[in-house]
Image 1: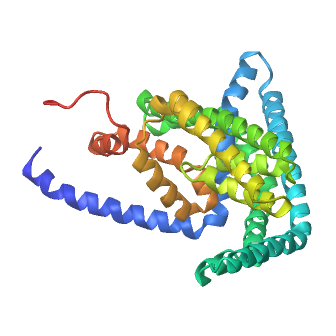
Image 2: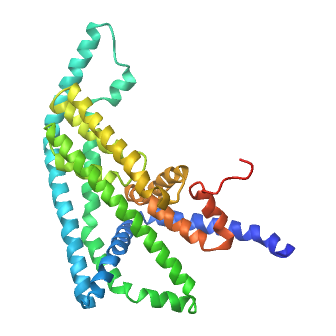
Image 3: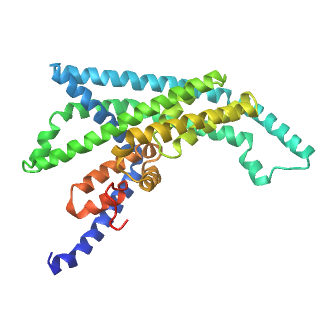
Length: 348
């Protein structure tokens, strides 16, 4: 590499970093517009193998697309209908839950006072019944509003699938016939599909087990808590913890402290078995991201795109990693954000 090229390279890095900051700021500003199209893109990527399978079975292209979109629409609309119905019913019962929680907090305060103990004022404010139920209402209402763009998402999926057949030829034309670009695009698609497919199966198992567990313990809205466990399990590290909080609080409101502890213990066992047992064995080698990068990507994409960004933080980071692997200048970054290599370090 010549000295002139070496002197210019820092300028290119600085220019590229500045461009990245501008692009990220633009995406964050247009979050409400970007998120539905991001969800649609991931649904379209997942649906593409089914579409190709139908075409290999000699199903006409238009009929294959119609069948796939119809199947996706039925699943999505079913989930939305069940979830929003449970959320609305929970919000309607919220005043009763708030009253019951206030009574239990009052009984706990009296029990502590009889033993010359008090709850610190700061903790008492955090554990205020109206604050707790109000926060749960806020989170559930946010989920309901997130479903408001469902028809836009499904319509976008339809158009993306219509364009999918001609996309490879467009990539070849853009790259002047270089097949490496097409191979890299296929690698991105395969990695994304593999991750989301495996994560969906594990999340579904988590949601079913959680729903059964809270149903056995006679906690209201077991389907809702199972759905929450399913969706929030896509968020690495903290999603399973967030999913447990509303169900544990409701167990306390409906029953007593021992029941709440049993619910908490059930969530802990399910997530340890699946999250720490099954998931690393099934996905560990194929994920290719370090634990630190997974956590940082969770925070970063959540800041840029909100809750949906947290759900898709790992697939988005994987796509960025694969793209960086495609270029010699950025391959070292891909190695840096990847998992620890199997090759031992010399001298160890």
